[in-house]
Image (cartoon, rainbow, N blue to C red):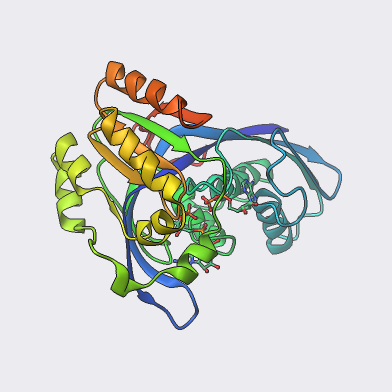
Length: 291
Ligand SMILES: C[C@@](CO)(OP(=O)(O)O)[C@H](O)COP(=O)(O)OP(=O)(O)OC[C@H]1O[C@@H](n2ccc(N)nc2=O)[C@H](O)[C@@H]1O
Ligand SMILES: Nc1ncnc2c1ncn2[C@@H]1O[C@H](COP(=O)(O)OP(=O)(O)O)[C@@H](O)[C@H]1O
C-alpha cells in the first residue's frame, strides 16, 4: 500500500528559555503554530529494509535522516519485518528553524502507523516522536499550542486569525545545538509575555499577536548573523506589522493581514534573498489528525 502524508513547517510565535537542565537540554516555554509550507512524505511498502530518496540534496541520505530514524524506530519497537521506501518531497528549507526534519519524522510515524495497522494513538506517536527530537511531538499534533519542557508538554491554543506569513531564509543553515550552546540568559533584554500572547490568540487579535511576538534565541543568532537582523529590519520597512525569527533561525517571518501587503513585502525581500515564501497559517484550520 502507498501512503502520502503532508509534513507542514512550524513557526514560533514566542520562544522563552527558562533554564538549562541537568540533562543538557533547555527548559522551554513557547507558542508554536503550523503553516502551509509543507514537505510530502511518500511511503511505499517493500519486502525488507528502509530505502530513502529526496528531491533535495541538502538532507542526509542515511540513518541520520529523521524520517529514516522514525521508520527504524517503528520497525524495531514493533518488530516489523517488512520494509519501506521513503520519498521526501522537500519544500521546507533545511536547518532553517522551521522543523522540517521533525515534521518529516512525525509524518513518517503517522504514515507507518496506518501502513502497518499499529493502532497507535496520537499521544503514543508523540511519545515515540520525542525519542527523535524535541520538536517532533508538536509536529505529530500540529495546530497551535504552548510547548513546555523540551518541547513535548503541549497545551492546545486557539488558532491565529487568518493571515499571510511571509518567510525569508538566508542562504546559510543554523545548528540548533550551537545556538543553545551560545545562549546566555543574562544577555536577554526582552522576554515573551506568554499570558499576553495567549490572550491575543483567544481574542483573535491580529495586532496583539504581532505586538507579542518574541524569541530569546534572537539574542544569539542576530548577533552572530547580522544578515538576519538586516532581513528583520527590511521586512518591517516593507510593511509587515509583526516580524520575528523562527526557532533558532535563521528564517525570519512576517505576519501580514492583507494579500496586497504580503505581495509587497515578498517582492521587496526578493531583492535581498532568493528563498522567499508567502503562505497561509495552518494552525487550527486543520484539526489534529493522524493523516
Ligand atoms: C529551537 C527549536 C524551537 O522550536 O526549533 P528549531 O530552531 O530547531 O526549529 C526546538 O526547540 C529545537 O527542536 P529540535 O530541532 O527537535 O531539537 P533536538 O534535535 O531535540 O535538539 C538539538 C539540540 O538543541 C539543543 N536543545 C534542544 C531543545 C531543547 N529544549 N533544549 C536544547 O538545549 C540541544 O543541544 C540538542 O542537542
Ligand atoms: N528529513 C530531514 N529534513 C531536513 N533535515 C533533516 C532531515 N533529517 C535530518 N535532518 C538534519 O536535521 C538538521 C535540522 O534540520 P531541520 O529540521 O530542517 O531544521 P531545524 O531544526 O532548524 O528546524 C539538519 O542538520 C539536517 O541535516
